[in-house]
Each structure stands twice: as structure tokens, then as C-alpha cells.
Length: 452
Image (cartoon, rainbow, N blue to C red; front, top):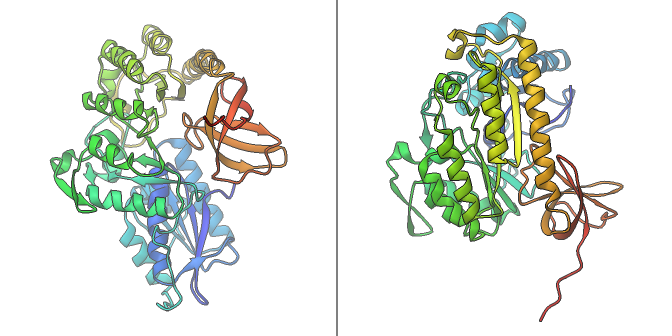
């Protein structure tokens, strides 16, 4: 199993390994736990052999993620022997202990204090306040030039395929002043891209009734638009993820057109058939969504829209699936991910009639992705010859690997710049797009623009 997002924390006698699985929200949880542990005298070691204890932050959203988490716990037990488990899968303690009874402690998602207490119990810290230093931005598991900014926890929706509310509870928004102060610390530390994440980003502040808070002495409402506007005043790219398509999302499109935040929306539409959307308990007016997408692109022609869909949801007919393909044809989305429906323990959708056979799910998944590849290829091909700003994510022997403003790390496409080995990770440079396929771009460095 790849040793990605695996880190460790240590003093002379107290050393902790960390494995972080799952989504960016879970990654932020890991960062906060590690920051707390580091402030108490633990440090980072890179291997099971060097760690005195291992913490595994799990994912329990779909069956494949559950199996990956259980495998990671087993590997940590084999290689180290002392393991604490936290994260979304932690809500299913009996299932974990049935496979791995020797786990020291199991806590649920967003249980920072419980994890730290468990570490204290099994590996007391040796703290020296004169030498144990934590940077102001905290411990980060991302490269230095970008960071995830989690603005809330939990979700008020009750989508039938999802168990997030049972794992993480209802929406709890962080005070906007606190969020903006964290963003400032990150930018001051050298972060050049802020990826805003939560379970429901556009619902930000509703639980606080959009209460006014203060940031640098000025009032700011705890609300989606005001947060985006304030983040846009910082010297960093701002990218919005997990945006539910409420009507007020329309308000942030002009901010994108003005260049305050990136022209990028990550909206998980999930389906297009009103029948299936109703069964999912998702918003179901597809014609309204299409009209809004057209309006958004009139206001901000550069807008990139990424989305995810579920194929083979219970009750999905051939007609429902064709509606979904028709929606993709009309919407012309830039980036699309799709999953074959997988029953999640505790999800209401498991009780719905009309289970779709696995072979049909997989056939629809393959058809949808092939259909979308043609759309994505055409949209990327239209950018050949254009001058674009990219950020360098990696420098390899052949050149540099970068992303445009329209691509999020890990989930979207890349830009390959042959020969640009002199560049550094985090650099922003201008390129000319030379070639495109259905996912990625190839480019060369652009000549500096002539000054008048």
C-alpha cells in the first residue's frame, strides 16, 4: 500500500507515526491533530520502525474506502504494533475490532481531543517549552504552496446515499474572523493557493444566522459571499470546493469575473433525472441548473465547473441514465468524476427498491466517462495557443509539472512543461498551451510580455 500522507511526530522518548486517509476535510483533521501533538512535544518520524505509536485517520464513506482503512490499520499493527484509530470509520468500532481486536483506542471523526487523550494515555509526552516549536500556520500535510482551509464541519442535508451527518453531525460553521486569521497566517507562511473545503461550503454561516464577526478590526458577516470576498483580498489563489447549488451561489460569480477568486466551482450535482434526484433528496430542477450555468458563463466566460455523479443509483432506469447524459451534453462541464453506486452501511438509499445489477452499474459508469471525455477533450483543445498562468507542483527530470487556475491539485488535470527544470515548486509562470488531450495539457514557457 503506498505510503502517501503518512507522517510521524517525536521527542527523545515519544514518537508518533500518522497515516491520513480520505478526503481533504480528513486531511485538515489530521493537520489539526498533528499540530496539537507537536505543540505538546511530539515530533515527526517517517517510518513505522522509528515510531513508538501510530495514529490512523480513516475514511468510511464507501466500501472501497472502508477496506483501504482496514488494510492500513492492519499494516500499521503488523509493522509497529501500537495503533490508535480515528476518523469516519471510527463510528463503526465493532467492525474495526472484529478485524483488528488489538487496536489500542478507537475514536470517531472530528474527535481531536479524544485522539490526543488516547495518545497521552498510551505514550505520555515529554514536553520542553523552550525547544518544542510549532509554526504559526500549524503542521501541514500539503506542499508549502497550497493548503486546505476548512470553514465548517457537518452538514444539514440528508442525502439518502450519504452518512456524513451521522458521522460528523449537523453544520457547525467556524467564526469568519477565525477562518480569515488562519488564511492570513497561511499566506504569510508562503501558501499561494487556498482550497476552501467543508461538507457544504455554500451553507457557510447559516447555523450562526450570518452573525457579524471582526477581522483586522473591521466587521465581516459569517456568510459565503463575504468570506469569499475577504479571502479574495489576500495575495493567493482562492478555490471553492463542495459547493451546493443554492441560489446565492450566483452572487460569487462576479467575484470570479473580477479576478478576486479563481473562476472555479466544484459542485457535486450527483444526477440529472428529477426522479433520481428526488430519491437522493437532492435539488431536482435540472432546467433551472442549466439556465444558471449559462448565466454564470455569460458573467464569467473563463468559469470552470467540476462535478461528480453517481451511476446505477437504486431505481435508475435507462431513461434516467439517458437524461443524465443529455444533461452533460447541455451543461458542457469541464471536469467530471463518476462512481458506480455502492451501498454505504447506514445510508437510507439501501432501503430503496430497484437495485441496479452490478454489471449495469459498471457499464453506465464506463459510458458516462467515455461520453464526458469527448466533452473535456473539446474544451481543453479550445485552449491550445492560449497564454495561461500556471503554478509549479513538481519538477522532474524531463521538466516541470504544473496546474492552471482551472485545475485543483490531485483531482484535475496537469500541465507538462518540457525542459523547464530550472523552475521551483510553487513558482507561478506564464506558458503557451501547445497540445491537449481529454485530461491534461502540454505547454512551453512564454516570452515575457513587452512593457510599453
